[in-house]
Image (cartoon, rainbow over all chains, first blue to last red; front, top):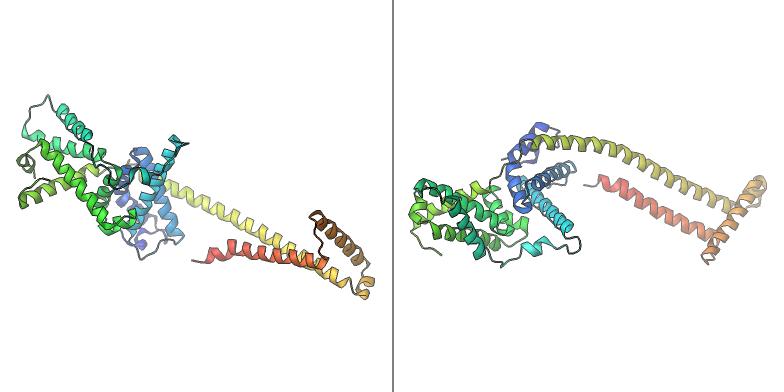
Length: 213
Length: 147
């Protein structure tokens, strides 16, 4: 992974190095942007804005070399997506615009409503209803359950999961970006995983699941 | 919470983690890098143009401030020198200009209900202009080089 500012080549005018950096980070950063904005086009535009901000900040020597390049970049991606999300919300609710942090990032929310859980399992059942319940279908079904689950949980869980598993950030780094205590970050990851386990084990036996591990 | 044997739990966790990774991994459109690089090229082009405009504006501001300061210093000099008889007799136009300026300043101050001597007025204006010049230099010149 590119972690050194000199490897990006912006200061030295090396566009090849910068292109390499973009190629290396674009998909992982896009996932993060998409978790917040939910809309692929908006997430892509927001990511383009983030890369431009990074480019400008290196050119203007605002980046402090003591911090990790990836952490710095993901902070820009997160903040830009959040700002764009607020702008979109403000457009739809021009009178009653509200703070996304307040509305969606409050601790103590229900991780998952009972209805959502039933909905996911019903959809999967319907999808595979006509097919023979053979074991080979189980893996596909479980994979669909995970996908649907991650789409349904609140952003403050999916963003943390994305940062941890896709952006490969440490608990400390996530805590720094989200300005949350490390304990809260760990707790969100743990709770999100436990709930997913619970949902899967409600429908499939452990034996069925582990058959494919 | 579901209880399971340790090795099963580890396997299950691994399975979940790989499932989460696969589900969260999204791919951006293939033309993204190309579009971004074009955007950066445009940004650099505009930046060059902005920098030219910036330099031009700076010169205009600096020129105006210098002109105003010089004019005020010249006026102050004329008004002070007016008190010397020999200077006035040598340059008659100085007397005319200074009388006009004094009258103008008095009338101008009357609009705001103020009564300052011409010298005090000029000193006040000079101080304001000096502070303004410092503010301008700080904003456009000093801060730019400070990193």
